[in-house]
Amino acid sequence: MTPALDLPLSLYIHIPFCLRKCPYCDFHSLAGRPAEEEYYVVRLLAELQHWRYSFHDDPRPLQSLFFGGGTPSLLKAASIATILEGVAQLWSLTSDCEITLEANPESCDQEKMTDWRKAGVNRVSLGVQALRDERLQLLGRPHDRNRALQVIEALVQTGFHRLNVDLIYATPGQSVEAWLGELEEAVRWGVGHLSCYALTLESGTPFHDRVAAGRWTMPNDEEGAHFFEATRAYLAGQGFLPYEISNFARAGHECRHNSNYWAFGDYLGVGSGAHGKWTGEDWGTLRTENPRDLAAYMLGDFVNPASVGAEEAGLECLMMGLRMAQGMDLERYARIRGRKWENSARGAALVQGGLLSVEGGRLRVTPAGVSVLDAILEQLSK
Ligand code: SF4
Image (cartoon, rainbow, N blue to C red; front, top):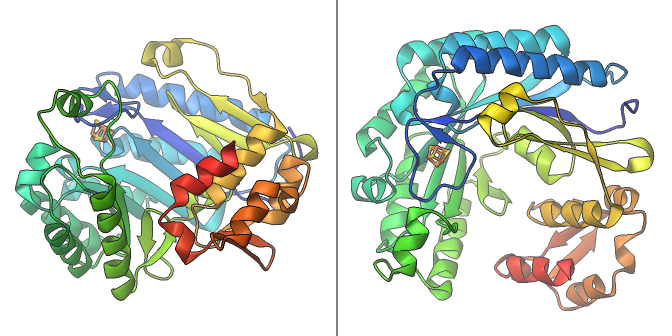
């Protein structure tokens, strides 16, 4: 393994179990309570040891850990504690290491929340998705609005001052005014971070089939843009900065873990379906991708890192970096890509057209470019 570069190192832990499958979801998640929980934890610990051995000459402490899913809050709190103890025996952690756990309201109770805190979890990302019961039913979520608000309050009182709430907008039949009412409520409940995503139709999901069959109508592009702009304007007025295209935070509440992804930092990924990415010799990019099949993950060999070509890695660095308000570090890009971004003719045209800007060694999307980011990224990926 390459000796440490001056890049932060994070760790992602995937927990693939969910109470049931939501009808719009194409994440790697399996419906049903994890009968294999203990075995899964044992496998995770073995995989962690494997990567620690592979990184034995890398002195970097972990700056963030993230339990994602699936629904990590479905696990027993003792399992979360066991995994965290295992990590701490293998890696050093920065003194302010961010440790996030994704949770869903129906699998949170006071005892678990208290135990997560004791185990070292210091940030929770709560899958609320909507604060109107009719929208929660449409999204096929098992909780209701009251339950979501009770859990938000209980998390804050348990000491989770760094709290994200996930919300989905632009669902069939929703108005912008009603959506802003939900946002207002989330803000009022003292949340410091909001992830707001428009509903997307992933092929193979029941939602996709309903729209394809003409049973539902999704908001059109113009209506979608109206939702997007109204969200940004409302949250800016409430002191939430759009530090990433879909993520809004009060100062100091930005997610360190996800920011490391977007900045093309290094991270290990353990668990079924998890991805890892780090920087090797001469700024080469290495990647791992665990099998999404649970049995294959549990019983197979650990995967080997694969080398990613400079062109592909550079493009990914660009795609992710432009999603952030602070933009992409041009020097990091040049090292990864092996040539300067400034030499891109297509990019220069977008700068001249006022959609991108270069300042202080960073490439950013301008305010005019934000609403057409997808088109910009498409242009740059050709
Ligand atoms: S809870 Fe999240 S990960 Fe699980 S099925 Fe629903 S959307 Fe997918």
